[in-house]
Length: 341
DNA sequence: TATCCGTGGCA
DNA sequence: TTGCCAAGGAT
Image (cartoon, rainbow, N blue to C red; front, side, top):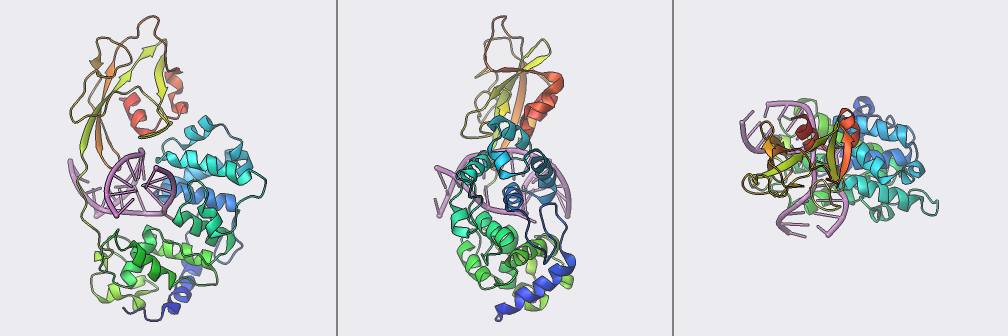
């Protein structure tokens, strides 16, 4: 490795960050006092496996509607779930509320140590370290996907992910400075997002290129090495579109599993072949409506056929939602597509 | 440890 | 079109 002097990394990186930090809604400028811990925490949860571009409008809406953690803690569950609709990974929204209520219980506010943050719902190793460093200036070792990539290149780590995670964390800890840890963490992530990118890293303008064993190897883009992935299975399901007097039938999905707790069209079983009208909310002459909707989840690809029928006169169950106000129903993207089909 | 859990942009 | 993957966490 070229990085036999880990102390050289942070000063180089911070000097670069002072000139090239991205301006983001939840961030203080380099060297400035840290932002409100509530804003840091909210942004970090939204940014879990989510791009800054996707998270930004949600962050602004949440902060405007619920300006403090106390306001969020007092919100209705359904309002928060609906406000999260479209951002994905909906367990985050449930944990967000649970965390807000835990933090406001007793009035102490956010804990200021990594260990105490780690015990809160929806806060794992990454988020605990990030909030501790960014909001409370703690020298926590922050490790996200960007930092794994940067570190794997700096040290030319040949072990494949995810097995190499522990080693990458240990190496990352050797680089973490005692001064400006929040700026340092954000600098590492900015470097990964803008220069040390997954494809075609811009080593020519990288502030760490003289320290980087991956660059010295001539093929930095082959780091981090990753284990082979399995192909996504394809699955099929039917969604049942029922209209009555300008309204459409919606249901709330179960608290666990796919799209948990979200409003949705009624669906039948997810299967290896089109299941037709199996699982329909009532017996009827169901007719396919348009082509199947394709939607890609993390671990499978779904082909969703929208089926349509008129409800029996006395049918009840679910919620009738006005079609001309469907945008306010808080549907996840899959069902927005299905309704629009 | 491995699996489950969304979405959208990009090459 | 297809695969990749982005500031991960819970179980």
